[in-house]
Image (cartoon, rainbow, N blue to C red; front, top):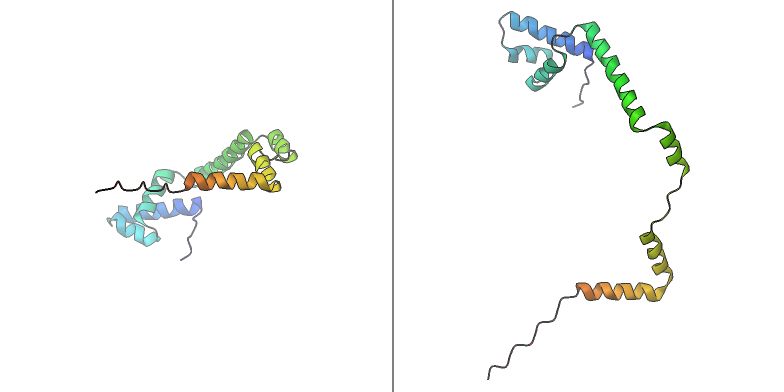
Length: 131
């Protein structure tokens, strides 16, 4: 089932519908079912948009967008982005060592032999003679 994203204006209208139904004496659960959301969603919306009027919600939306733009501008300054896009990543020392090992077969086999020896299971000592 596709998830519906409600606009803030729709949320305020639905919260007002529930308030009207509760004012008529119906339980909150019934009012929430009437607007087609879960109780958890209703209480989350009420915490965020409860008591706001339509023009205040529009202003809140504009402020949130502006805040997002400012956050991105502070976190990622344009000069830093330009500098990062111009520089190329260079291989680290370990990558250069790995490339060197791949080119030189004796280095590759020695490294492999060391790895095999380090992970090998030690032999069991012989049982003492019971005579």
